[in-house]
Length: 73
Image 1 (tube, rainbow, N blue to C red):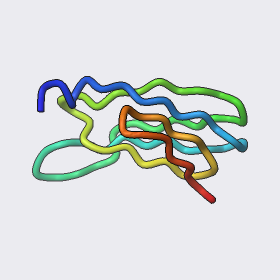
Image 2 (image 1 turned 135 degrees about the vertical axis):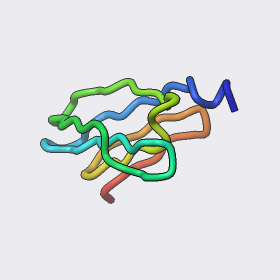
Image 3 (image 1 turned 120 degrees about the horizontal axis):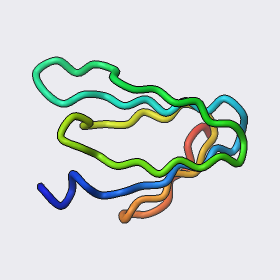
Image 4 (image 1 turned 120 degrees about the vertical axis):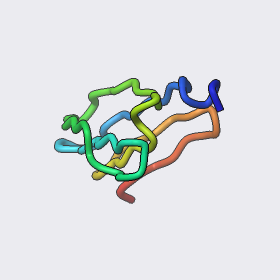
């Protein structure tokens, strides 16, 4: 799992106002970080010992080592 934690992924907004929300690890899952992207903005992110999940709200392209995903379609 150690290699999985540091994997990077890319989120590219396809519209204004795309929300990227980080969720915590542990017994209580909580929001711990939020970013808002505008059309064309790109965010590089990674999972850490504190971040277990990322939620993307809005139209975006998400690129990971597992493939490309389109959100908000």
